[in-house]
Image (cartoon, rainbow, N blue to C red; front, side, top):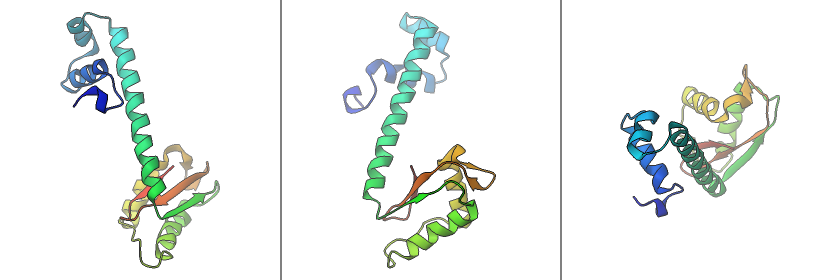
Length: 138
């Protein structure tokens, strides 16, 4: 794949390939004739670019999602899980959440990160339910 088709530079792709192959930053630096600090900076920037690209894709998926709603701080986690199923059910049978209760709870915890603490939402966020039943958090 060419760098022009990605959010990465050729050098970033090269460093990530080598890291994926198990090379240390020191070994990559020696191979490419640069410093470990430079390789570290290239890798860090590449990972930020990847995160931005992933966030862009998530945003586009969320735009297409037929169901969106905001989750307010203070919402109990168990209530949030119920809200997701209720919103999908209210979509006239067009949307079916593809996760059972345990898998959904795990997915929400993973996607929401630190916005949920001790089974309570501590920072507002949005939930989208896609047409194929995936649940996304923004």
